[in-house]
Length: 406
Image (cartoon, rainbow, N blue to C red; front, top):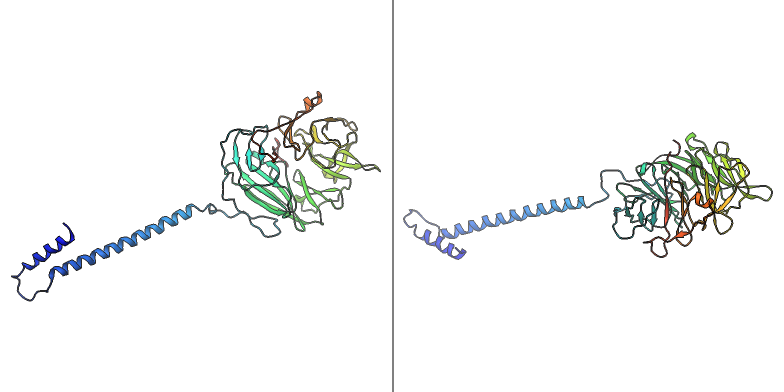
């Protein structure tokens, strides 16, 4: 029944009610209809209000679910940032990518912002850029990535093995050094040297000392920081755990390649009146005093190289256009360099199986196996499938079987 038919029926019903005494309203049907319309309008307004409230609640819930930065924790603070920058997780999480042609190697490789693990997993790390060094963290807890130096300084990212979202730990740092187990970081912050532990993407228990201009951290030996003085020449040791200032510099030390399991530092020193560059084992407990020196092979002054996990081998750049492999277990004074293929164009890293990996100037991956080099084999570079033109992979250094300071 339509509204017009209902109105006519009501009027006819009330017009027949003539037997009721007393005055009647002029239009009782109209009163009923008006009351019905008012009730209908009130119900309509109530429905609109409820719908509006529901819309607000749903929108608010969606906004809260859509905010990636609010996870109930405190934001990460960039310690040592001279410009007061703060860091926060980047909005795009790292997710394994399944595209053909994954890069496979004995160690993890970073190509641009894509990480190919030795286990065959591929992750996009959106936000990384210009990475120069990469380090695994002890217990496979994640990775630390250090950028090349820029006009704004260096950046250090932490990536969790579970979440995988790149998080800026340091920004605008003048220099950054990472321990071989990824559990300690040192950097230059304005006039100060700072070092801290790394736990779950946080920099904890920082130590800070004022240092002369130009003094920068270059590595770790145990819990101590190796400090370079490029402007003055030489290197020293900062025993930060004892609250000391950096010790006196040894002006003869030109570069350090790493630390052996016995605690001795493998370095490049200048000896004799001609300041000939020689390989030396340095004692960090005695201000990097050489305990053994070998001056047979000529080594490049760039300091690129790496010590094997067992402390037996050094892979470094020779003075010529080739890398060299040197036995660190040879008797004192007998140091022989074996040609080991294309020179290093960046950091080298050793596998736990005893092979060294590095990338040459053309972006090829070079594998150096000591037994084959001693047999006369000359390693060559291999092109990696899936690497875009103009990009060079970065070899991710693995952690030692026994962490530093253990």
